[in-house]
Image (cartoon, rainbow, N blue to C red; front, side, top):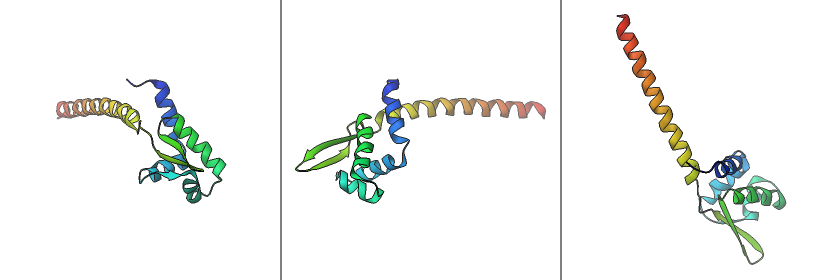
Length: 111
């Protein structure tokens, strides 16, 4: 199971629409903080705060290129989050399948 702290940071980062938009944009390729701030209509300082949250969660990596800060998708990608979701998806699918079997058997008994 994935460390709870890693998941907490990732889900907290993903809870904001602006940060989800940043990840969607970076999925197309690297971009500067300015390029990310413009379509979101927020200041560079505001975007830098969002980038920092994504960076702390391991979802984004930044590096200084000349005078600009270049951002790209982090190495973690969403592997830890997807592993957590997949685990619980399987758990619930098994439980719901069991419930379906129970109701099918109950329906057969009433006939």
